[in-house]
Length: 616
Image 1 (cartoon, rainbow, N blue to C red):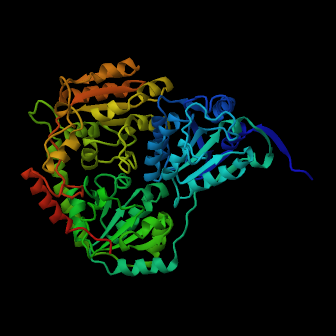
Image 2: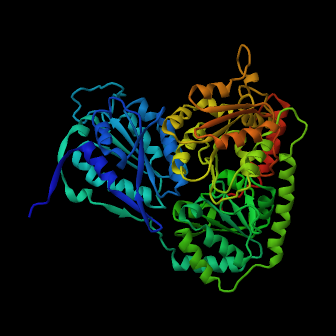
Image 3: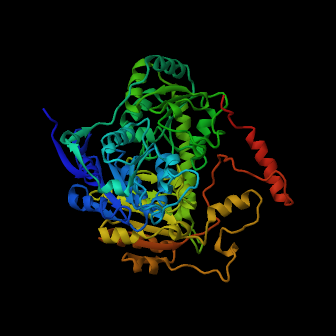
């Protein structure tokens, strides 16, 4: 009996396959691929574009303004869906493809799924070199798409139409496996997109996927239980893995039963609702004094679903050198860092088995009480910095305080780079679980507005999406204001104008350097001036408000909530007023310099490096 087949072009078959993939999200089956962002060029418009148009609402295609930003929108969409749905970003060849590499880096760093489809050169090479082809004299197989190899979890180039039979299932398995999750890239040779092939009908059957939950090794659970049960001052660190495993309720219940205070990473912020007695807020360089103080005293750190990057560990100075780290992670690569006791498994399954192995063990109540005292002090300090004062220009902290106070549990706040991120991690009190998206894995300037579009798309039936960013990030990538207005996805963008890259100026001068090339006033310009962000956003169709002082921000936010389309609120903020932090961060400081200030900073920096945990 012959296998039934259907004759399709490779591009048609690819789209038909994607449309028939579903995912079981807590018992509800939804499309695995929720849509496609695309900018068409000669490398993808006539074939892939034809297939996408035919797909219609089964795989809706949204037109972006920049390939990087539309891929970023896909990242934010997936994050809002806790990695249960994936967006596609499709580009032509050449600069259209390379524009997406930055977004791929952000997705790779943050362990977020994204399917990237880029046009490629002709497999047959008859018309070489084609428009936008980069030629390598010593390797004819290289194209710009090879640049994705360093920032993709899965990479392939389709040079024959039958290859997608193997490639697409592999790409999906990589993106859905928590241990390997990240972007998948597939290059589509232009002539192969047009080729017809007899595809097995079975390839297009409706397939329902599930996120695997790998269980940990029993011996590692027993060892972890032995270490934790001997602890006097344990700390639980909740990372993004708790979010994506949907393990937050179980992790918090575990912490409450055992009397363990909980700190969060940037990706994990929102695990604990503000006011919970076990919460310490965020750890690290951008974290709270409460979490950092408790981390310094902890004898065991139970790190769940975190890759322990330097902003969280204070470049490995926030923990005592003697502290034992027990790392629960689906990725062995992350679980073994810094001689951690590795428990390789899903957060939900691992915490359940660890809880069972611990029996009746519980920490002395005085440890949690100390954390609660620390949080009272921290909250009082944040309140002080967020309170209105007589300053003519408000601080970031004051702006964050107003937006946070007016937010609802279903509202989301989103940011990425610049001075706003530290003020949000320190000053945003989470009212709802995981309504906090701060892309600080890659700290991608330009993520904010594009990511806001993706989040607004994902949360269309929920609350408001507040995008908070500085003037630097706005200038870098703002065109998805137009995208959101066109598509009808509403977000509220708060542009905090502080006259340049203020937070990097702070780092620069804090290490003894002269202010140089960061604030507009310190750049090589004829005459500094401010951009009219409200007028600029209005030209892209947004509803806008210019706010001159803090007392007008509340009215503007209430007005924005009543609007039905994307709104932009612009407000000037101070570039030299920050909520203080007490965790250290390792950056390069010149070993020799003519400036006494740099020599002094170098001496202090070298001394601080002595506190670093050296990996053993």
